[in-house]
Amino acid sequence: MSHESFLEHAPSVIRKAKSVWSDFIDFVASDNVLQVAVGLIIANGFTKVVQSLVSDILLPPIALLPFIDRNFEEKFVVLRKGPHANQTLAHSAGYNTLDQAAADGAVVLAYGQFITNVANFLALGVFLYLIARVYAVFTHKTIISRTVRCAYCRKYVSEKAKRCFNCTSWLDGREERETSAL
Image (cartoon, rainbow, N blue to C red):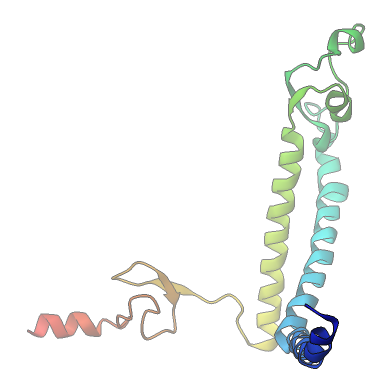
């Protein structure tokens, strides 16, 4: 492509680039994208608060129980020792920390971290449910909608729906009355 040919097409390329940029700005500035972005930022902060609550407040007192000798996150089982286990562990019964086992290349089952993650998940779910209930009390709008199963396709449908969104059958039993009348 010659230099003159490039200059001939430059205005249309610039016009297309401006159009793409304008469309992108319209998309980013739309209400839905901004609402989702704000929601994700708030959710990230809320998740960190709940994780701190579980890891720093709830689990440490449980770690004081006599049969638990360390913090939950440090509970692990060695499935296979690392290559330097005999040199490193000559004077002790095993790895003292998860980091020590990982540094030696040992294969470990970190069940303490799993317990912590399950506790975080359950606490997050409970707090989100409580927030939804408090929101419903103050605004008289429900976030948690009750559902029923469609008798035909077995999908969950809003309790207030008149027809199933999946199979379009009537949820008030209208179809059963029509077929039994025949």
